[in-house]
Image 1 (tube, rainbow, N blue to C red):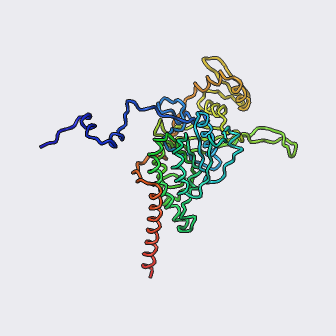
Image 2 (image 1 turned 45 degrees about the horizontal axis):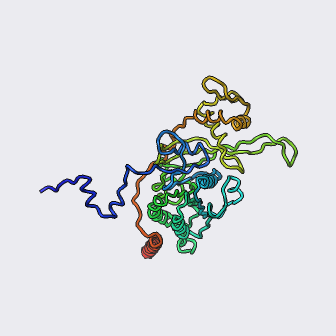
Image 3 (image 1 turned 180 degrees about the vertical axis):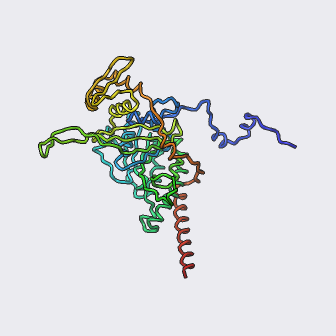
Amino acid sequence: MAEKILTPDEFFKKLTKDDRAAVIDLKNRKPMDFIPTGSWVINSIIGDGTMTGKPGGFPRGHIVEVFGDESAGKTTLAISVIRQAQELGGLGVLMDFEQTFHSGYAQKIGVNLDKNKFIVMQPNHFQHGARMIKDCLLMKPHIIVVDSVSAMLPQQFLEGAVDEAGRIGLQAQLMSAFLGYISKFLKDSNTCLCFTNQLRSVIKKNKYDTGPDEESSGGRALKYYASVRLKLKKSTVEKIAVKSKITGKADKDPVNVMIKASVVKNKVDKPYMAAPVYIRFGEGFDNIISIIELAINTNVIKKAGAFYTFSHAGEVKIKAQGKEQLRKMFDEDSDAYTLLTNSLVLKEDEQAKEEYKDIDQDAAPDEMDDLLSNVAETYIDTKKARNAKKEDEEE
């Protein structure tokens, strides 16, 4: 005899208390919270979850990965987001695995170093940092930044229990277990967990291998668990004419660097959006020149030789010679700057579309401390068994 098909109401009545807690009430669900990044361009290419191109930022309650070239602004972006979190009244935490935090630069960007608004920690190894991240969630910070994945060395590697080859595999397994455990707590604390990461060259198996030439370090787990993956690629350094303080002769002084920012994964809004971003040396993100560059690329600002013209409704609003002069005029004319930002249209990055694909992954089990310890022990025992078997075969 066929079983009776339950209605949703009958099904809910049969659920236990724990089961009911797992059911999401979509009708009364709160909209997603975002932390601005400090860059209007990056906020726009990530979006605000409405799929309308409106600026958003880093989503709270989610994992974000920022990876790319060296000196491409990864740490600058991370510190800038912490500043924005403070302006929203929240707490920012920095897990400085690289132990290179520069408090003076953070203050220059605008970070408040008060311990009630900003906490810097320097964990000794992966397991130590993972435990501290879990404990930090009790404070419900707006954002925890981990700088960087490559510096999250396993305890067993530092103690000499595994070599460099073993470190790579062990770190990947620890990362998979840690992310599966911590991700469910991020939603409860509404905390954004942001990882900065470095790129490593990929050794191609043969000439027909069409995979990417570079990969972010730390294994595949972070790619799967991250809701947003932002790639920063260093492009050009812009210089202005100055008089050398050393020789007294004409010279050029670097003022900013252009970064190509690409959203290669986005589970909160449109993916594969890309745009240029400028970082002004010693100051952080230069929103005005970033928006100007985007406007030039999309033909919103017309370029003729060294002259730049911005028109709206058939009327010339700004005309300047050189980008620095153009920047200065937009900085002084807030109305023209607002018109410019409202005129911009962002485009998809077709190259990122081809290179990066989302892959699902199973969640990891419970109890983080025991979990990471078991992962490390199992990995080392397996490696020892393989080495012993290889030695027996050679004899």
